[in-house]
Image (tube, rainbow, N blue to C red; front, side, top):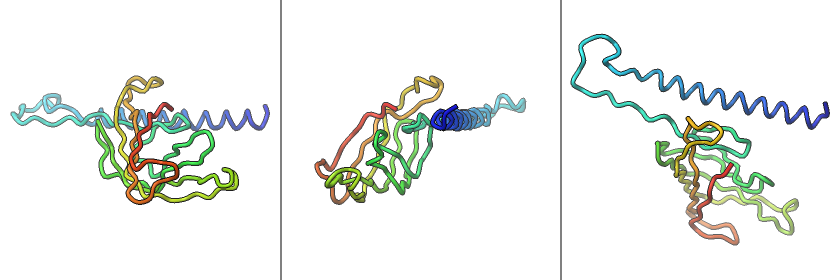
Length: 164
């Protein structure tokens, strides 16, 4: 087996392990919420809220993440990455965070470029079934709102479809 094939096999194994871990966590959270009527005692008139299954964000390596501190936006070349993410909310429909967008200025070309930091607010939205794991919901949209300077060329408010 070649070195690159061994590396791909190891990465695939780690990816399967992480996916299995997230799916087990989702199953454990779901199993932990048992209706009061299942305990056999007297039923109470108060309703116990049932939490919604967590929604994940899928990264460039097809791995599910919840509230990641870093997130790679440019999967092909790694020239754009969100770092120092601090999540304010993580709900069934949206998730919001503040952090820094590290963007390579690619001057004079990307290999010689410098990474520049841009403060940003991040919003994940559009939950939908994850095709590889239909029982898991994943966010399908990401919105970046720059709170100071903006990468050149760029807009203060941009949205991307997450198609990983």
